[in-house]
Amino acid sequence: MTVSADSRKVEDESTDGAGTPQSRNITSRSHFTTFSVPYCVPKAFVVSSNLGGLPITLETAVALRKILFGTAFQVFSYEWKKSHFKFRDPYSDLAYALEAERGGIRSIQMAVQAHILKYLLFTRNSELESQNIKCLLGVNHKGQESALAAALSDILWTAGEGAGSFVCLVTADCYFAPTIDYKMDSYTERLQLFQFTDREKLQNFIAEHICCFTGEGSHAVILFIYSLLLSRTLERLYTDMDNTTSHLLQLSLGNFICTQALINLMLTGRASPNVFNGDLQYDNQGVLLKEPKHGVLARSDVGYLYWNRHELEHERLPQVGSMLKTPKLPIWLCNINDTSSVLFNTNRLLLSDWRMEHLFDLYFYSGQPSQTKTITLTIDSRPNWPAARRQLRDIASCDILI
Image 1 (spheres, rainbow, N blue to C red):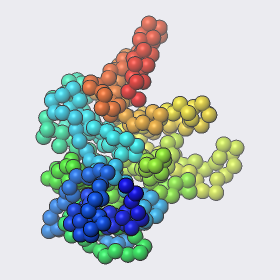
Image 2: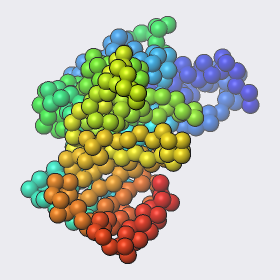
Image 3: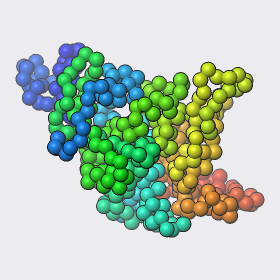
Image 4: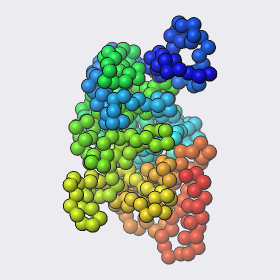
């Protein structure tokens, strides 16, 4: 069936908070009675408008769109709207792991995954220097929710520099009228903004409303991004970025993916667009740049590793600086051939005690549905060729999940 421009317009205008077309609008005109929707977004998940948050303004909605897309007329796609944070089965071999989607959504989910591991391994039992990998296998449903609340609040609090953070939730009310300068999406206009200046209260609030981040139709990933941007503040975001990055999501193969600035924001609390240490004042020829390029200023708890076969072949592979390669904790978000995954170790001393670096295990979670167990890579840096060959085989076997 051919769908006319008018039909698409009516479809857009007759959506509820999750983007689901309302049957009363579709059937109210006879020529729409045979219209078939190619997909179904879960019913909108909204909270009461009486929670006491600050209703979003048109100015804030426009600013959020522009920092994300560069324009207030771009909206999130269906894939983004339906995405949320969903764990693998409790008590399973991957009970600690989130199900990961594709593209930019996957980058967001895997960055949160890294902070979930931080909580499960090093925060809830902070007195322990080392954990056994088995501690991740017995996570129950309540433990999963607690880990997610801790991870989200940790990222938001860091972005707010420990002074204050925001949480955005979708309510039943719409807080501003349509305008020609902004494209309505039926959920951004319903946001209430909740501000926190106490970290414990922030985490408790997210825990109390964890269904807003785990439920279908909750727009969870979008809500998290909005909360992250407001926690950082729009003024700080534009200061963090340089003239190489004007907005945080970029279009690639028909889908929006995360810029390095957005990834760094989730890892370090600062939306710097580059992976090298510090700010770059000169180019490769030693010529002073008109404006400095912003890199990573300090070590964060979670690190970052990057490798891309195509860029390596064309000698364009960026060199990740030591601030990201050697984080405070042995957890890394990995970007391998444009696919996000996590690599981690259970010993917090791995990066601070040289005696731990000779022989150790790294654990790998790809986020792929086909992975059913955590992959173990044994790293042996001693001058032992047989061990080195075993290490190479382990890494090679991991490649099928990247």
